[in-house]
Length: 99
Image 1 (tube, one colour):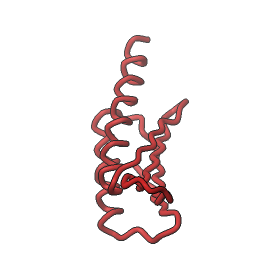
Image 2 (tube, one colour):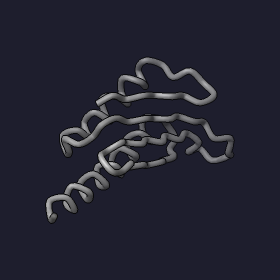
Image 3 (spheres, helix red, strand yellow):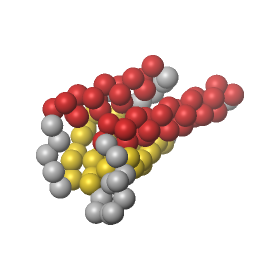
């Protein structure tokens, strides 16, 4: 699956890009219908420590799956978003199997 990564307002290092690509690609073990994904990283100007945001959108036939998570680090936000997307993929897969 193609993974597009965009960092808004800063330059993401290769380590973060590699980590994110590996995590998002693991979602393919749950479904063969994943077409592509887009990841956007942002630093939010808040007093809160959890000011790192990761948005992940996955394109599947007929739908887009989306998760947005905030955390203290981008890696933690990616982990949380991927976990949320895993649940969405399994839920969608369950609906298709019932048909």
